[in-house]
Length: 246
Image (cartoon, rainbow, N blue to C red; front, side, top):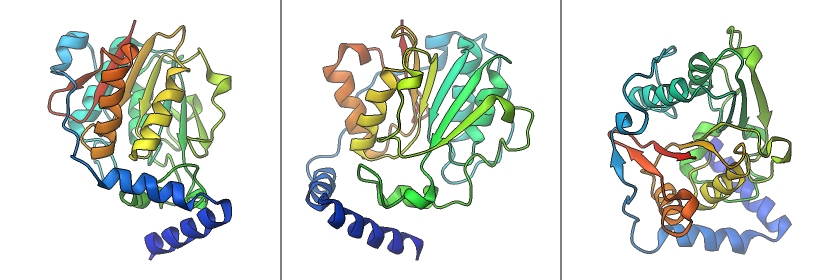
């Protein structure tokens, strides 16, 4: 019922804003042509960061929409190894990854996490995949870190990632985790925006769901066409892609 209502509201919004044709074209592009094969080099995590990174985990009971346990361990090991002072996350969902990143980061680390509120689901700037709607339809974002000792280090923002004002965070973030909408347009938009956040152009970007068709297509294009992203790797046994920009 929610999904059908959201789709109808979206159509009405697009008609009002004159963007219906653009969204239809975006949808058709996602459905036509050969499905993109994954081309990022596949490596063991240890090849990237060594095998000495410590890791702590909590909230191990994952649900649909969370990263897998192996992916959570991968992300936490990267955070523990890199020791970022600032983290920016797109796609808070229930806050499971947010909480675990906070647990593995230095005590001084600040985490900023951005999520689309359910009330804005029909008003996004870009196309949302139907498969994403159920993850947006929740009472609150970040429930897993609420009322934990780590909550005070986490700042939540509620907005469309394609319309969010990132400028206060330009050149100030050490590690970025992108796990927002899985449409091609959003992956491209989120990646371009997050590149501007890296401190002096250096740091780590982690993407989730390098396995969803449109995520694969977008990241493959960055890897092929932009030298900045030529170092992207896919961690074996996961849908995690990682770039260490040095």
